[in-house]
Image (tube, rainbow, N blue to C red; front, side):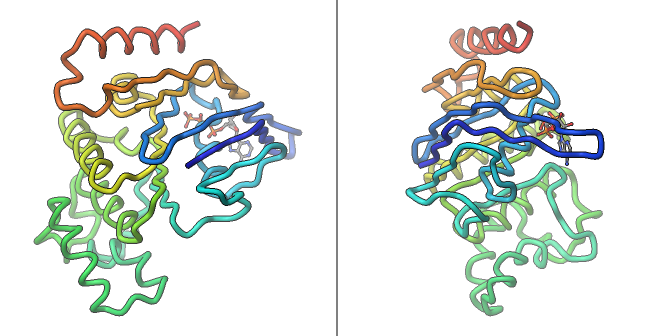
Length: 246
Ligand SMILES: Nc1ncnc2c1ncn2[C@@H]1O[C@H](COP(=O)(O)OP(=O)(O)OP(=O)(O)O)[C@@H](O)[C@H]1O
């Protein structure tokens, strides 16, 4: 589904060139979750923006479902670090933003959003504003907005980093359920080793800046209910930690 070939990206600032990514190659099969993990500043967010078509590579190519990415793609949804909610809009209006921009009628919005919000545990909160929600609820609104457009690719930048451990685990579980129901191809950036190993069927460890691929780990057990309690899970967490420290 997603293929990246020989990708380089460099930022240009007043102070000169800042190489952010060097020679990235990766493949994410349809329906899989791929997690990007690496030291701060190694280019994880940059790679996500490139996959979203929001930045253009200096060298190399990105292909999604047979289409070369040179601009944002309709069926790719992205959830940014701060959830991207507008404080002056209600839960309903925030969740409906993508549909409204694509000129869905009020009735069509209703048909798509009502089951989505209910499924994400947000029924009854439609008239609240983001400031009246918990961090986990805000993240659920952002997920509802992303899913409302029925994407086939979901890109997430540290989606659960601001949440307490239990809320984080509950949302990770929600993500796995969404994944199983919708067969989304997901790329998720995280700093959290346990999250990477719980969610990532493929874990890509990047080097320090400029980011290069240090290791690609297959993790077929990812997402299954009791995986966190298995020795396989703990071994893989140790392996990722070791790779990050080398
Ligand atoms: N707009 C920009 N202009 C210049 N340099 C930038 C810009 N955005 C990011 N960078 C630099 O590019 C590199 C990669 O940044 P990026 O945000 O992609 O890293 P990251 O791995 O997501 O970091 P973190 O884990 O801290 O969020 C860093 O060295 C950063 O300072």
